[in-house]
Image 1 (cartoon, rainbow, N blue to C red):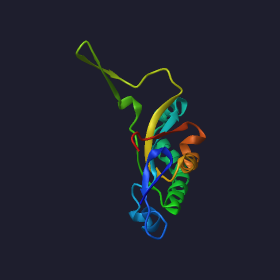
Image 2 (image 1 turned 90 degrees about the vertical axis):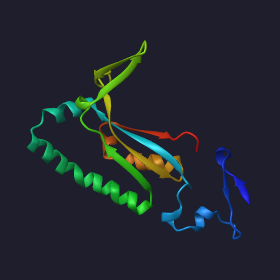
Image 3 (image 1 turned 180 degrees about the vertical axis):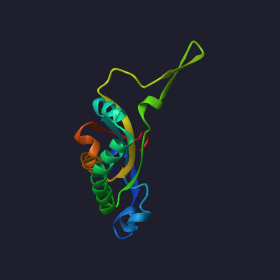
Length: 155
């Protein structure tokens, strides 16, 4: 039997009244939540400060940040969330491609007038938007920059 869910999607119910997702072990429940892309945006001033640091200074700063990230990863594990993510390289190494009049224009970048730059992302499957918000609130980047939450299309 299929039961309609919010957003027009359906979830199959089993003979005991629960959804199949509810009955499966957590590690096998793929596809039961909503996938969100969390864009981790760093404050431009922090990036500029980082770029001026020596290698030892960068290492010391990372060492100070590691416990905050470990706390986040511990919480993610406790919640049983499926989360993937990566940190992006220095924005100075980025390139922007634009096609104008059939010609590719390659420029260094991104150098838009902005207070924040994308520094990484998480792709997380959460039970709902509230859980995605709770995850975003725990990301260390949110303390100085921001975390933008975007649901993936077509779910």
